[in-house]
Length: 363
Picture (tube, rainbow, N blue to C red):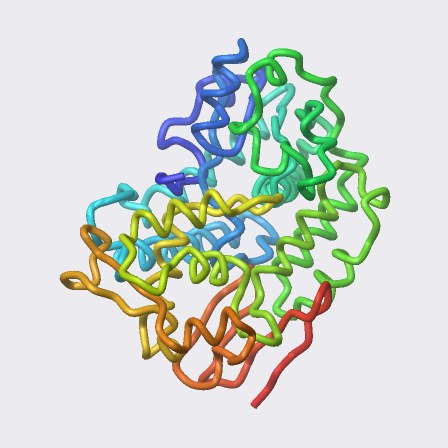
């Protein structure tokens, strides 16, 4: 999703009119897919909550600070190497996101019925937990429903989470054209609050605890797989690589490989419920090449570290990391925010993943 705002600068008029209905989905692609399947008029939630910092958002009084943190994260991502090359842009994110969050509150409060259409990606489950929190604060939770689209491909045992895992826009039009019944969100509120609290906590221990629950313990399909995928955003205890770092490193050859080819290969190799975006992967590719972040795993060839025309190849360190013979986070200024958790190598604050568990590493 190139645009990171919560809602469009001018949200649908239906959300501002008492008695109107509000249809929401994650991203413009999902809204377009719904329209093509005969359900036009959906408003997109555009912020990828799976990336960057997430505060708890306890009420409207925290909206400005919460939105400023989100806008700051995406602004820094867009301006930093290598994403400063021509590519996705955000129009005035600092001004747009707070206004959009207020519009979302107005839309939910004013709608007679609101619906969130989704599949079962990590991103959609986080977005639903976020929506349920806002709706509860606005006294609108009883009017919020969820429609989980899942076809036969969802039962594919070869892919954890099945075909629904990559999001609504990836589903066949025939699946979207025959929607399942909507379900009220209120009975799911406790589980959704647990998810939101865990992903926004400064200590991720509860996230690991929730990820250990069996699939049948959740009121929605795909939650167990999505939470396991969330754990994979943390560095591995053996290599120091998060899952997306490892995907990028595996897609980089020992010979010079175009950056666009690396990103494309990593996106194609990504299966399961964590839908990775090219903007986030581009940022991580730059970090893998930056010796100030950690010993460089890839070598960069190109003007000003721009994606345009850039080529990369694995270093000896990168080959050792992939072979399980080295640990990435031994020195450097590696920092990464995963929801409420702030990983900071210089400060000695790291959480490492061991299977479906997380353990702190303090130096």
